[in-house]
Amino acid sequence: MTFFRQGKLKKVLASVSGQYKVNEVNFFEAVDLLTCPRDLARVPMPGDYFTLLQRNKEQFESLTTPEERLSTKGASHDRHLSTLLRSAELRRVPEFTDEDEGFLRQVREALDAGTLPHKTLQTIRKEIEAAVKKGGIRPLQILGCFRRHVTRAHLAPVMPEQTSQNHSREVILSSYLVGDHQ
Image (cartoon, rainbow, N blue to C red):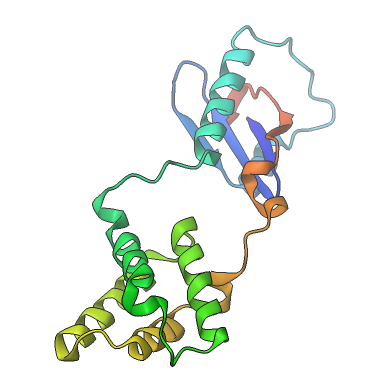
């Protein structure tokens, strides 16, 4: 069992000797597994300890490494809305205030960063497509749709010190459990 930390992210992973599967264990389960009587005798380090630790490290790395954005169907709402926001019809709209333009710039950045929830993007796209069918692209309607569905929390800037990518992966605790714990 290995307890990892990367920035504010904390995970406990457990490998079982003889199996290649790595399981994620919640913190309270890990505490229960690590609890033992004071008089329990220690056992020598088994030979497969480092193999199991390496499996846990690889699993943690795969869980915390961001995937590259691929041009798949899942990203279609992102691409569609990003293209719409970058279109000539929405670039220079005299009715938009500086605040509106700043908001749309933040939305474009959030789309590029992939921080907007899929369901939110799906809802926005459906509303905009319905509005377009009724009367073409109206910039103020599109702006209103984004304002209704995109909250400030979605647009909070991602500071470099807050991203898990900039923090090193640390092994906080690693143990080999014997007996009934497996």
